Amino acid sequence: MRISTVVIITFFTVTFLTSTIASHYLATQLGESLNLEAENHLITAVSSRSRHIESYIESNIKILSLITSRTALRENIANFNEHENEEDRERILKIITDAKYPLENIREITILNLEGKVITSTNSNLMKNSYSNKQFFNLGRIRNDFYIILDEANEPRIVVSGPLKKDNALIGVAFASIDLTELHQITQDSTGLGK
Image (cartoon, rainbow, N blue to C red; front, top):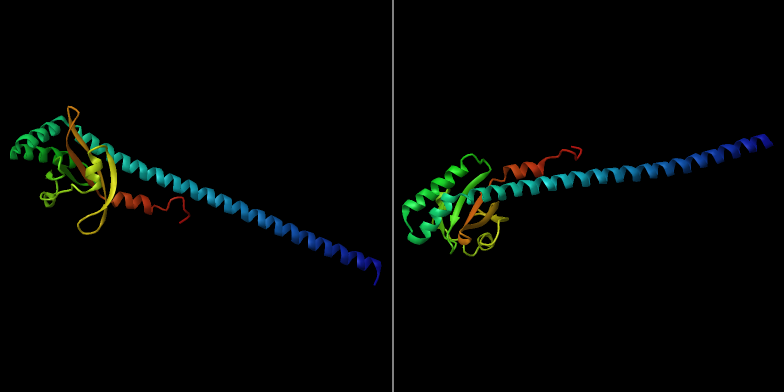
């Protein structure tokens, strides 16, 4: 074999091996870079979705706070607790019904006495219920918060609850059951996920 042939074969072998190693290295680096970019994108999308859910829950807690801050509501509840007058119950129901009317995501608003029994509700099916053993009642005596519960049909729902106070004295607990449609839309939104 001639020297020029050996040199050419050696040159092509070295070139082929070098380009193969370089191509493998670049493909590996590109794959890692793409994986890192995809991971960062997903983390950003999940973080954004998480903030959206938190904002949704906080806005519903704020809505309940605004409803329970109504002076007429608190005065009628205090009067009802003292006299158990049906006129007070009707006035309470009118106030919470009027408050609920423009709020499409609120399924029902319920007012509980200090024992956890329903004073009134925008859902008449709840009128005979007692929630004294429910976490959202017991903690709702202390602070505004949200809870995920199973309703009577074993369906999950979100409840926001909080204390009702008059002159810094606890007079009851309010809770609102939230429609899950908007929350479902938030969790099912695939924006930013590549779908």
